[in-house]
Length: 193
Image (cartoon, rainbow, N blue to C red; front, side, top):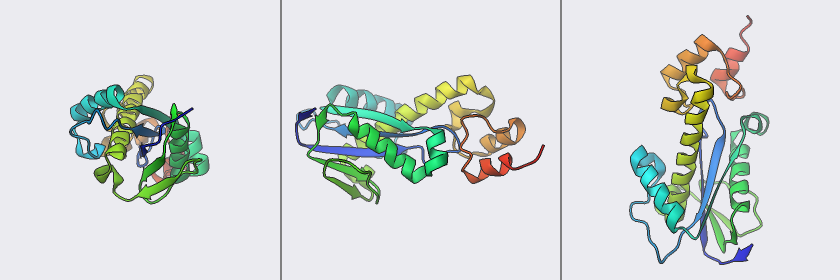
């Protein structure tokens, strides 16, 4: 692994959904190739996120995406699983960052200097970029899950607890990709046949 220094931004996507993995991404931006329009992924349209993700892939010095599975979410809890996904993303980098900045108030265990930044996805470009990559990767994964489990509408709500999703859960039951540790899913799992 090359040592390049620089700031590595880290963020996750998918803490709130009832289904699918939690994703994390990390990005080391290139100061010589700035990317206009970086922002918290939740503030961007899907088209804006896709366009910016392409620019991040092209212009960043380094980036990586990782996930923690539904099984890991259910066994560890969503916070720890999110930290695990972040740790995995940083470990996949092809260079050693000088400092890792993580969105939120918790940090994964890393071998690099790491600091939490509350609201970092809106104030630190590297974290904004990571937010965008995590969100676009997770959304694409949920579209793939929709092909396997078309009854649930994953391509539309991405696993979040929308009325449509709750209705599908009640109608079709719990799929293998649902998080059984989350209350709405757990409630359905405990209903006797």
